[in-house]
Image (cartoon, rainbow over all chains, first blue to last red; front, side):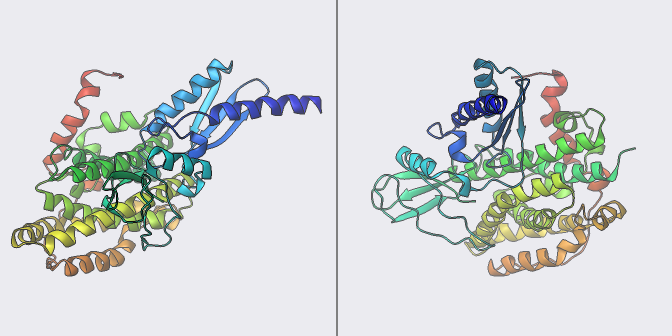
Length: 166
Length: 250
């Protein structure tokens, strides 16, 4: 009983530690907010296994996230770390936490809406994160990072990023 | 002697890698800033897919080659991509025509491959299918705009479609290797993707007021390492640094 406690406590603590790693491109979000962190396990001998999943196949942030996880765990006294990238099941914006969506909006990025289903991409109005107006238009489906599209608000006239729902 | 699964992963990986390299050439040269960003994003998606597929090929081969060794240290004749993806970009219309043909093909391919019995291929495809849906939509929207645009944009889009059409046949060529893997539920026989592709692409061309070209010559050979004269130059540029400075890191 005592042993089991001793094992699960560091696992929780380490999970919390890893969960706080920020996304290098959208630093207001942690990898847990994004739904990029899949699993943290620690074995009896102190070896830590972490599983992360990319938002997009070519997401260049993965290497930085991996290095940040290794650094944090090393600083906490866990030098033996394996970070694995798992692709399946494929990441979806549905895994982003509500808190994450809230933080995105505060940061000036319109959070993803519900995921489009089937082959038809249903366009729901994206609200401007600055003035809240639904009177917005897509300027380009591809934005500053793979996960975002570029929008413009026709009410306050500001351009903004929208996190694409996939 | 390498196994069929290695070869198959290489075919898919090389298609994505070489097209990513070509699209990257547009950065800072696209007709508008949004297109610079769009083509770079598409290239990045393809590069990510290529990395997963080439890493897997190296793992299956078991000879110690990783994604970098396969991308940078193979000769032209060892590349297994179709010729369509290695052709020079040409003007914007030609790049869009290639995107329409290739992304529509890749969308059908990945949709089918997402249920492969091979967990890695299914994982890569299941992830990539969401990205490629965007690529296909992007190319479709541009084809409609250019085809049904001005006289000049129509002329150039039609020229692009006519010029690249012969290279689309190779996408759907099947051989013993792929049929064997398809029978095991691992691969997708490209020949089975043709009818849906044809319907989709000819539908877009018709809506864009463009004529569907007649089938005449069918350049082929990429899957066996026979390439156009353009691939060697592309590889020379892509491979120069790792070959000149082996093991270089930054």
